[in-house]
Figure 1: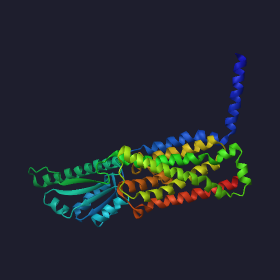
Figure 2: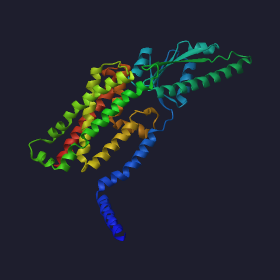
Figure 3: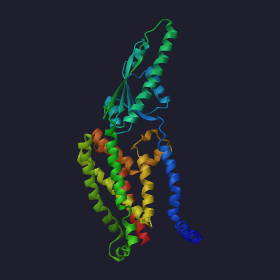
Figure 4: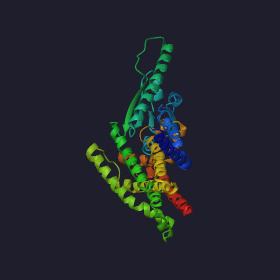
Length: 378
């Protein structure tokens, strides 16, 4: 028994030395859980605040300005865009610049000053049902609180019983997803996540596998240049991922009744850009990794924040600033806006361009970085 224990401890000592000598892998194992906890903990912070709001104020009266200030002061909404027509208000929603549009009619101030009730209209972006419902609850709460204050002032002035009909009559109109089907919101996001994960894993082991198998030396002594090698590693998988995109779209339509409002050809073209960037990221991970275990850890390190911080599950508007701004470094954040914009809104290139060019930039930067790092390792 003593000999067996000694042999086991010998193996333990050997493995422990192997672990502490492999510094990169050790750092990944130690740092990864803490980093994930911090980032993902911020992601699930789901308080409603600072929802981007566009306002078209036809009234231009003191009453309407006070109403807007109350929405702003509530903390639920952030007045970011002033529209000068209803079309301009709807365009801000189409482009994704705001999530809520408020239209105050021309007679708002006059109706309130005479003791009558006046309607206001909220246009809610229904592509994210959770955020739309939270915005409706917040708008309803602020409107009721404002109506109560107006009724109290009227009662103080007249001293007589009043008609307790709310002075501010709020109407809600849901755009793009009027039935608030959560499946219409999650399916495009799931398609983007599936493409991201598959593309990353397809190429994350491409170069490190060659290194471990000893075939990388053959590529080094060949006339193949680094950029030719990286591009050759990426292009075959672009075709594979494109086939998968077609299959998941068909499955979404046939199985879940997903509707496609926009141009499928445009979505396919933008998806190629997204796939090249994701595949290039996998090659970059493979280039900087010494073993397949390191490559796997780095891939997981990227996939988990992508799932939580890109807006796939929780609205990014509600995240604290560390999590919110971290999402801008994830290509899926931009692709989700594109795929939901095309499938649910029928948006075109003009509206989607603010989300397209970061994906183009990401693909170029990742490709060039992969080439440079691979050349250094030669």
